[in-house]
Length: 112
Length: 113
Image 1 (cartoon, each protein chain N blue to C red):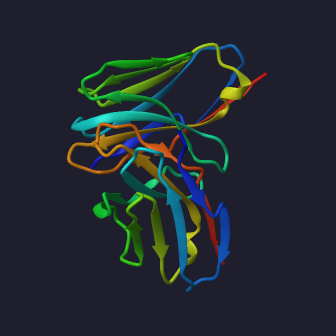
Image 2 (tube, rainbow over the protein chains, first blue to last red):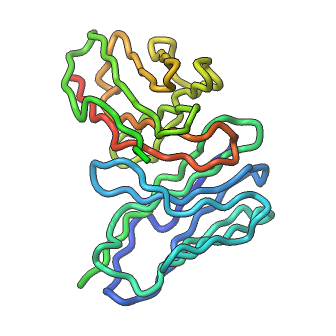
């Protein structure tokens, strides 16, 4: 059974810092991994999608990496801003499954 | 391009009642998935519909059922509501392949009293 873990559960940093969010998964047999952002009480906004054959994806100040063999992904946020404050979720699509398996998220607070 | 929309935004029901939640998929998408997100948790997969057929189901009882219509919009029905059904219900659409990106709607907040 695929399990996804995100550490830490919460993170608070001052504005301007670069930071890394971690995601690990137990089974390397995945189609892809997706990072999402969720504001309180709202839906999910897709940030980056990494296919299983890829090592990383970049969008603006965000960079996500994928190491399938070790079951790890990181989301790097450069020059953090207060508007980046949200919960960040990672999710994998296991091989042969029609679903996303989510971690519990990292709640990020950027202090002005 | 119209995004994923869900209705209603929130609702309150009494234990034992039935509820129907609705989702309109993004233009060009033929696959809809439903997720339940309890407070402070990651979303849990309920089921997926592809071209009007159920295409996968998570660990949810049969009182959770769904439909997909020819225009690819979808409904989630929950019978005999329980207090633990209180959650944010999220709908996601995609182009159909497992390798495609999932796009989520804003969710429906269901409270069962």
